[in-house]
Image (cartoon, rainbow, N blue to C red; front, side):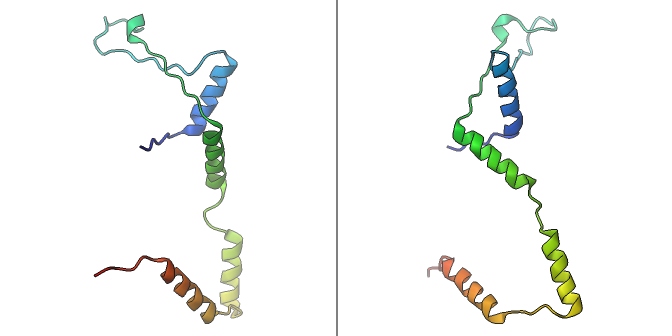
Length: 112
């Protein structure tokens, strides 16, 4: 079973603040059938606590570092554009063919 936690970095920050204050993360939930007061009664309040493992923290850090990287290497794109414009870009057909064949070899074959 897989569980996806969105905003893990925010949860970690809340957990760290809670740990510094000597408590876990509190989520107060009130029933829609309360007596109309602004605060839920003691029986309607629950506290949830989140504890992250070191592996989860490392995954979160790695995820954040990947998200911080640009999706496109702008310097490489600029260099390729310049090479195409000035006619110095050389296509290596043999290298492209080799990589296509290697990619095709990794694909599963269709059966009958």
